[in-house]
Amino acid sequence: MNYLVAKVIGLENSENLTIVEFEAEGDFLYMMSLELPNIKEGMMVKLAIKPLSIAIAKRFSGSFSYSNKLFATVKEVKTGKLLCSVKLDFKGHEFEAVMSNRAIANMHLRADDTVALFIKASDIFIKEIL
Amino acid sequence: MIKIDIQKMLHGSNGQMNLQVDLNINEGDFIALAGRSGSGKTTLLRILAGLENAKGEIKVGEETWQDKLTCKAVQKRGIGFVFQDYALFPNMSVMENLLYVAKDRDLAKHLLRLTELEELQNRMPSTLSGGQQQRVSLCRALMKRPKMLLMDEPLSALDPSMRAKLQQEILLLHREFETTTIMVSHDPSEMYRLANRVVVLENGKITQDGSAKDVLLKTSGSQKFSFEGELLDIKKVDVIYIAIIAIGQQIVEVVVSENEAKSLHVGQIVRVGTKAFAPTIS
Image (tube, rainbow over all chains, first blue to last red; front, side, top):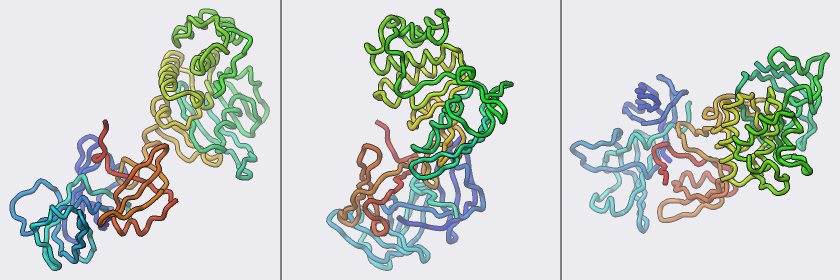
């Protein structure tokens, strides 16, 4: 699991659906959620993202419908038979992304590559309120 | 308004426990009383019924059922009681069981019609199924038009389809008679369907009190889809790990990463959660 401490900077509601905006390490993140009675602006929270929920793009240009884009540096690529685990550094935080070997076959990912991480707003969750 | 403020020392399997309940109930409420075995639920029902002594006060509207000076007798409290094991008189027919409580044949017929038991009115309890017997005992409990209906896990001995049918009938009878009801239950779906308020007892104290959704929705952080289970095994597959977890009567598999796998150990009680956006229903 990947964790990131973030500050709640905005809440947008439509009935019991909420989009929460966070700030972490100077970047903005967005989370889609059902009602969140305990979350208020200004709170510090620990966000969590599953390694399988992170998509990696190299030399990305154009638009993409994922709400969250973070830039990170590749530290290590561990390859299994079908899947691979990519260890990343996001502003000093270690992240892991897991995907199929096929998905990154033509990306030639190497240590020190700068990549964009894409995460859907529905895949981020609050692990705990700090 | 029903005001309950009682306390009693109990000697349970985990040693001494002080049952201490301060609860105000609106007339017509349907309260589910939940909590682990030995938390004091049945004792509280028995104290309300006058079957057990306790210190404190019980007031129902203008009537005092119990205070320092008074302790109203069981038969004068206007209580209907439904137990898990039906407790019907075996030597009396269905109709006779009802009329034994109050000689009101019209009400008996009406109750039997509502619960689809009219055709069985002359049968003896031993010839009825468990579900039918429990419906009879429910009708019998309402024959006195009680001020309070107390039910101690009334449906736990029944199979799931019969349980769902009886839940419907309990709801129908509650809407018709508007009897203030307290039901001990362990079944979240039953509490959600029937009760407008859920009270949880733990070691003799009320620890949660609210709407069924507020009390029963188990969340983990912002995750709305969350269950408690026991970690049975953890296996490495390729570059990921698969955790095998027993939840209720089912086994589920959850993919975890290496750093999560390292912090888990077999036999551990874990919470399995995901966002409300991920699960599918089929």
